[in-house]
View 1 (tube, rainbow, N blue to C red):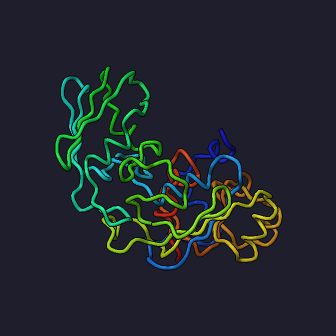
View 2: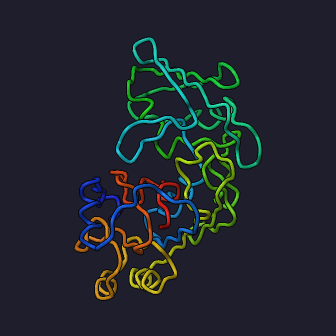
Length: 281
């Protein structure tokens, strides 16, 4: 477990108190436009987490408040004591290469994956936009489990491609990327989440190993968010936001970065969804 994973504790009340203490208020609603630039450490696979969270979607999604909501699936139900599940797919979803999302893509992406609490799982297509899961043991939590980053959907199941070649249905499509070093993506036009997520025009992520250099990059305006920066120089300068607190700084941001009222509880980077959930003021 990385240091950033242990610092997952952002509730709406804590975030509001934090921003009030720094003289900044939470925006009433997100704003579109601008660039969000992140500096991340090399350890923990955080570049991959953020990049794939921006490019790939899952059947379901855990919202920052912890509630389950639909993503590529628009409905689901179970029968046979939660051992058989059917998911109906959205019919307005297009991959970044222009191909339409089909049940066959879901089957190819999820076939052979291990789901916690399920010894055996198979998934079949019932039609162009419906899939069925068969579990060896009942599991009422399957829709929640399928929201995990390991259950993303890509055309023909190509979820393990290098970042530079990755194609998904997410709010952002890859411009350029180098494994373990940097990533840039631009917002997809007419996306099915329009008005709900994907606020910035582009997302840029750079890996900087040294926490002092990450802090310097934020202080000097080269990035907008720094994960696990060295705190001393930022605290002396002032004018930044710190999460979850100045004493335990998992993230530091510029004051013109818009933050959701609730940040996901499992990872300070909004469970890898920071690219589509945060915005510029």
